[in-house]
Length: 87
Image 1: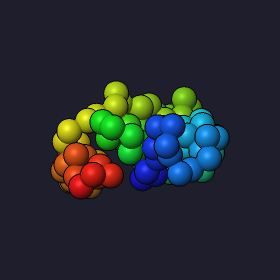
Image 2 (image 1 turned 180 degrees about the vertical axis):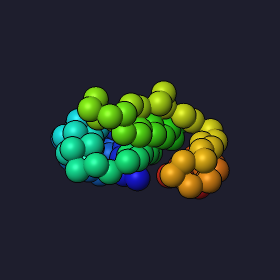
Image 3 (image 1 turned 135 degrees about the vertical axis):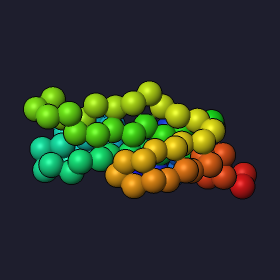
Image 4 (image 1 turned 90 degrees about the vertical axis):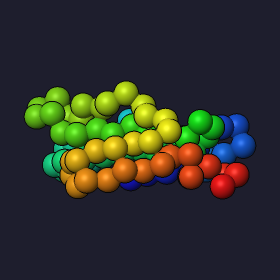
């Protein structure tokens, strides 16, 4: 899971979001890593969960805000609002 902020006040370089969502997305899929999550720490905090979809690389689910719940790759329930900079 890669936490990132797209806001203008982010501390990571502007190219970081592109690196995590395009470059690493492809590289990790090519390496066969079955799941790839990206957390965006800008308000509202969101999470995009991807899973390998064969030769097409990752299939990303729509971004989730609020509570993220999944059973794969392990059961987890995350309250994304608790990841806010104001928490």
